[in-house]
Length: 295
View 1 (cartoon, rainbow, N blue to C red):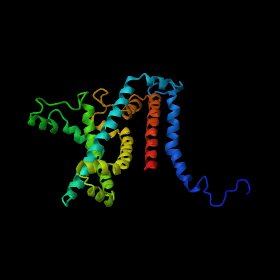
View 2 (tube, rainbow, N blue to C red; view 1 turned 90 degrees about the vertical axis):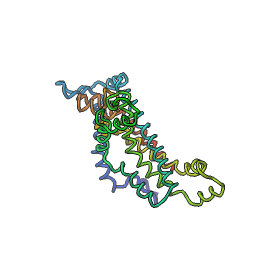
View 3 (cartoon, rainbow, N blue to C red; view 1 turned 30 degrees about the vertical axis):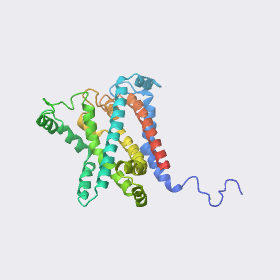
View 4 (cartoon, rainbow, N blue to C red; view 1 turned 180 degrees about the horizontal axis):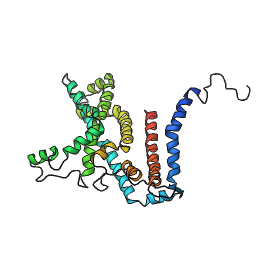
């Protein structure tokens, strides 16, 4: 066989039809990433008259010593994993309840449970912001009427309550996704498996734990990884609700990068933090791809 000639039936290493897509991605995604890497090694402040200058890894050294960065990273982890865990559990419970008590009326219940997912994120953020108002908010009104609290609670102005309050709004938004995903997974369980389990007298929790949950494992894993990536980038709900306050109590990585870049104009330092943020997201993306392969 002549050198360089492809054997019959072998696939080409490059499909020329994808070159336009690769070119668009290189411009839209590749160039900003490369430029961010370049900026991360420079001292570049838009408010300073001096031009950008190369400082090597100084921005990354500053990042390691930045107390606010570590607080933002911790807030991001709590917000992301806490919200996904709570939403996944609620979605699982709701999917099992709707599947167990199946009836024509459940169609309306299923439609109502999916409603929060159809509401735009910004609308949800402002809705909960007004619900949490210290004076006139429906949450405080209900708690005062029930006698649970004696005075209105400053839900979004209290450093210890602000992040859990925003997470409640986030869980309310995400739960329908898990409900829909797990409902579809439950519908895909073979009837033969369910009937065999009933013959073996599997009922209630034994049916759920021994039969249904193993079939839901893949859907839970893939859905959770998708929501982790989505919540890691969540900016709209936090900014519309608290803008990262009070102080830095609800500041996540995306909010902190936004403040550094577009309020303080520290583009070099913000780019270094963006590189770290990108590496974390790439780790989640690799985990997602591996989960798809295993599935």
